[in-house]
Image (cartoon, rainbow, N blue to C red; front, side, top):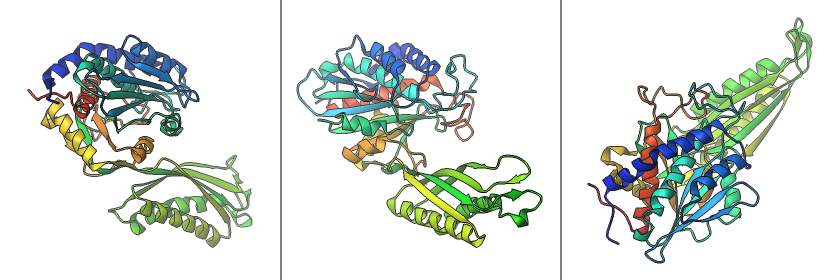
Length: 404
């Protein structure tokens, strides 16, 4: 189909609804919800979509929203656009006047922005539905932050009839308005690590009459970092982070056990397997060297997020046409965070991309990133996110646009 929309016209259309997109984002930000049950957020999404020509369904086991927009130019493929909706279990110290009103819960990963941008794209595309054939499916997903929400939605049929899948994720560590992606692995697999070191408790004044697990736990932590840099290829990297250590009850008692918890991140099954074997070996052998016992348990999390090469190229091409060449960026390496969009990419071709939202006056290298209690975003960049969602659908389905 011949392209029918100029990029300038598309951006003008987004500018017309941007205040509503920002307001929806702030509304969700004030009232964050965690996990698979997000009733207030679901209601906000349903209200935002209420007057659009969409076929809307909600999940039976989770508070998801799936909305289909059928093109007026006839039958064609189905392209899925995803936005996740859940928040994190953490306090907010961002200082914004629309900060979280829910203690211990914060939208520190930008899912409020993803939801608002996707709802905005639904408005823009609804006004252009006569220009394309096929169908756009808007996937509003709970439970990305460790709850496997994408997998649950797949089980409920979100991928039925879908030909391609795309998602955007904001990041303050990329220049505002830039779209960044790459072919192949773009985000890591994640494994949760749980280690318990068991020694013998006693009085702090007489450690020789006990067997103190505290320094042994510390030795394991440092040994894991040496292992990461010396036994794993830098060209197939892993990241091991011990993020929690719990042991002891008071200042003059040597505890019997020390518990450690953390994560392993990897971008291939080979490095993941090698790292898990190495962790097991280090934990047991260091404990044995000190006449102690140790247990190591790991829990597999999300798989590697792997972009289809042709789809990643398509994302960059669309970004260059819709937003300008300087807004399309090819990432040199994966990000070691994890994402359950991996489940969709395991089933369908598609691509995951980042939208830069670096706050004004800050550098991407020093901005408070995702999962920071001080994370903020440059809200004008949401314009490019809405336009990008819309342009991906229009180009994929043949309506498209031409650069001006």
